[in-house]
Length: 318
Image 1 (cartoon, rainbow, N blue to C red):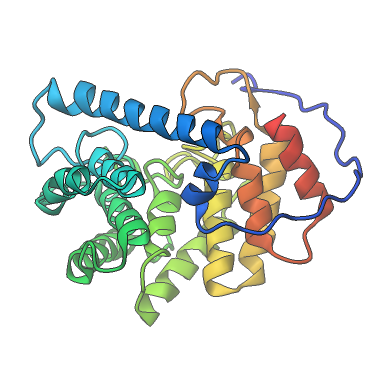
Image 2: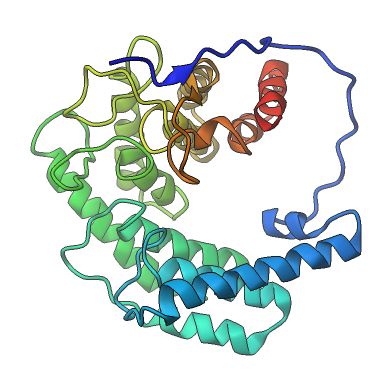
């Protein structure tokens, strides 16, 4: 198969004048809304709320979706309700907040649900954690979130015991994916945002070590267990880009240098092979080589910050 990326000809590192770091302002959403000019900030805020209403109408209101349609990115309830509730909070609209939060709390997960991020339990769990992070702990009860974690861990262990060497394994449409969209990386990332039991944490770490041991010699990762010989995909969905973020999260949560080193190795793959020839989707092919993804890696590393990672992050944004 022909290469799916353009060669990266940008210089690897160009020293620049040091800039003083500004004081942090709360969480990411608050920082986004805290623009230098208040009128511009308010304009962006109003535009975001208008866009949210359009998405709600087009994907939920017109099609009359039911409460059971909860999937995070591609469904019309969990993601829409979670984002709507948080947006309403920052807009100071309690009525709208209740409008979105009430149906979210009524969601019932089906038994045949997959565990992956885009369509499954991990996505719903992430939406729960997002609400608790912005609206306060207990907005979605720990009983609810723990039940989802238990089910994900149970399913992962059951499939892992069927062979392959990984304590946890998950399946989506018959494929045992590794990446962020449908596989190990996305599910594990969300699990690490919860309070794991000691044995669960060990299974998560051992699964990541399994992935690191079985990556390609060049540092990229297979798309799935069934696709261990094809080193082609360097996307957020499959390959090093999505897995890099999970490894950074693991280094932050567990404090293990091996995960940090593996994250840096994955970032090198994104740097060298991340300029994709096909990048037509907002959340798919090519997404990881732009925006805030390299900054996520840099922020996760902590001091001392490798200067070349900062430089690469700036070039990616440009």
